[in-house]
Image 1 (cartoon, helix red, strand yellow):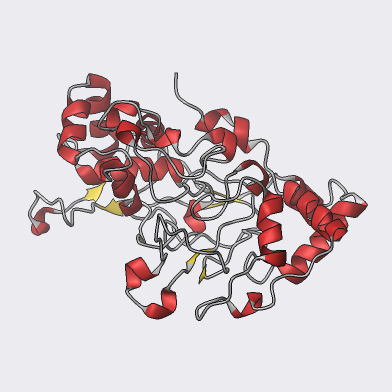
Image 2: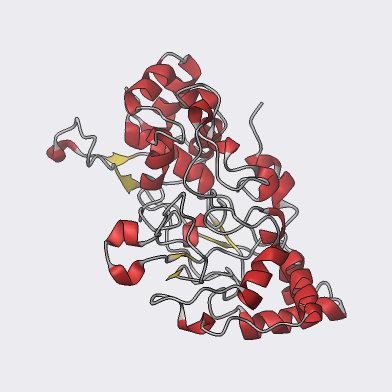
Length: 348
């Protein structure tokens, strides 16, 4: 199958915030001797927002990121790797949990977003706090109710392991491990996870047919969902208040936390519908166990408010049969090959 490929160029070494090298001594990071990788761009996808020009993809960098992603020793209690909240079986989301678990039996505020097609994102996390794929990795590593570490302790652990030391030197051509190198290695791995091989994708290519119910669900999606979840990525990456009642124990006001603007109260990032059938739980706080509960929210339980998205003032009118058909279409967005792709599994 033909894939568009991004040519990976060299990068200017990012040192802001961690610099121990004078600005005048910045050098381009060489990829000479490394096995270069290219980001896969499915034919139906637009150009990505992030092309790794500041973090050139290589086989060695990807594999280093994969090892870090699955290593529980990056957490304060040695039990919580990145993969504990981003499980391959759930499309790299949290499998059948409302809010993610952190170190020392803590809970996070939110349900972990899925980690695929990240190169098409321009902001990250439910509230868009981060605008860089590398920077967003810092929050889980150091968050007190996530992995709870400091970069110094992580670096001490990595420097004590010869294979890690050698891998970082090979990829980043620097004698010491630095915080931004950790973030960039993780970004090479997570940013390379692409999902575009669902039944829907095969239907669009003309290699499979939808059932009558799936076709009906597809048409219902176009009328009722596509304005916020447009194909092929099935999100517009906007922030919207979808009329969820606020949880009084969490008091999570979404994007307001980042911008401080009243008009952003209760707005959260629109998630992709890809792989949604296998990425339960749902919504920013994981309050819904099933997709049927999600659809029933839009049918019957949208809460009115000053920042409610205008498209949802009257909810979404669906009969029971239409709801069933829409659920079958959503199931057709499942990319089962992603769930077992050996490139993304825990390394031996």
